[in-house]
Image 1 (spheres, helix red, strand yellow):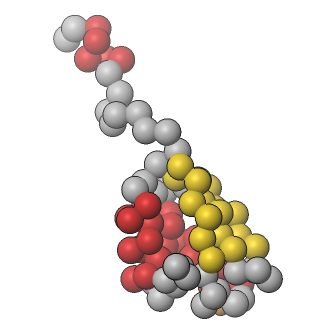
Image 2 (image 1 turned 180 degrees about the vertical axis):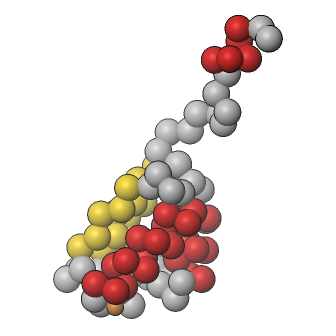
Length: 81
Ligand SMILES: [Cu+2]
């Protein structure tokens, strides 16, 4: 096996993007867990920071924005536009 195959990354490198979302439906600790799990189902390595009182969700992820948004909508937590 040539050396370059060993060091070749499995996936192309993508810089993580920050998504700042507002999720009005998110009102309690249960919602926080559901939102976090929805994001992680799009990207298990995503970092999720949630501020419940302001319904704000800050996500650092390599998954496409659309993938994260559709997982959130599926879970019943569609972000406000
Ligand atoms: Cu809740």
